[in-house]
Length: 382
Image (cartoon, rainbow, N blue to C red):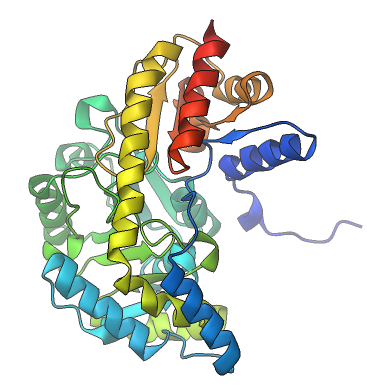
């Protein structure tokens, strides 16, 4: 007898997680691996965050919080928008979530119905389209490339047949690290406003930029939904804490969803994260290290044959066209892991149509790890 199962789970895997597991399996077997596959800072959370967590464990009950998170943390986030962007974002419009992933689930449930259509750049973060598919919302992939700095434009959106209900943008983006200049972000925000398209801006890599500060969609569209996280700039990946800024009209529906789906975000992480905003010198030093890693790979990867690279203005990724080396990026990454001891991610994770000819390098680890990985890749190609 075959019992019913839902088609919602019939989404593609998040391949980078499979690569990470394969890399760890090789480490367990005694091999030394350079991890350039996962977008995870190679640093721990700043010491004041750790100290706050220890104090909370000793002094706090660590019970539930409100579904939207602790008021002191939401106020610190409101202060962050004032200090970092010059934007007045009331604390009651900020929802603390279980990572940015929880923010995407809440947002997509609150604004889209089954059958709606949401545009997103490809290559792009795979969880966007896979969460949408699990919710029976249609992802409409906009094929972008180096000619548009891997970002969408109003002209591209105009070529899409049929009505759009949403647009997801990411600046800096994953997997390419490219950013939308203010003028282009303004154009996309205006496009969405004029056509009543809900704009969702993934700003998880804000703070991790090289020379140009990222602009928030909140500065251009007051109806935009902005999603961010403590995982990247704040170096708190495993603490599973993020936030969403939403228009007032969505607050009650998202509160009801949050209450039922998550009850509340992780309390210990929230208590610790309040201290993260006092750690900017240390966090900026982390970003400076990513910048050194970036420069190293841009210089060294062409020596290993990777000479068609994205120009990362932010985040900690390089996206490489490897079409002259392979037409099967999954097998290519598997061979590099086995033969060179370097874990990288196949582009098929980010672009189902063309990703067989691309790979992604993450340079979030220490300089020593990135340097060793570059050396191994150069030797592997000889």
